[in-house]
Image: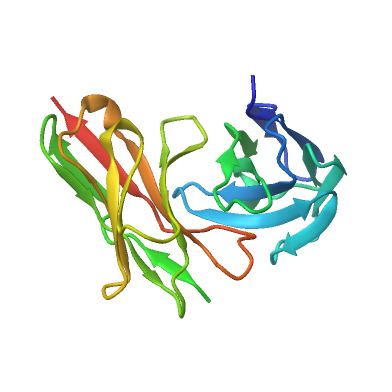
Length: 112
Length: 114
């Protein structure tokens, strides 16, 4: 199956903990993204990688750090989570030359 | 900077009725334009896209959208909605200069009742 896969589906943690989310795409794309969707459904880009190179780094707190081992994988680590980090984190990918992006199902993070 | 406005936060229609969801963008040049749909507890799915050419583009599941340069709009339409169309719909733009990111509107919650 060709798609964008994300793990875990859900994660509940406490303030101050560290969390990591994984994203893998089997679409053969070379650019990947992390978006944050808040409780009001607002979507904002966080990071973009092209062939393991950071391309877009929006203004996000320094506790967020993306990690890419190859063009098919893009992970997100959050050190010392805060309550405002509670959201759905969506991973997406696209092929260079195309402009539509394909999204994974998201990881829902709840910070208690 | 480019921006997208979806003026209707929530739209409610009966099954079988026609639908229009509005989208207005702000950009100095015509961007690439998209409509995505998000069903509950799922990611975003691409409905349709506009790059250039015919201003009316067809998408999946009977959806279409019309680009208007004069109005800076990209409204989504469907002739006859089904209850399964209930979802959140997002309009998005991508700067033609790089295509590196999508800028999304606030989303419109569509409820279709029987």
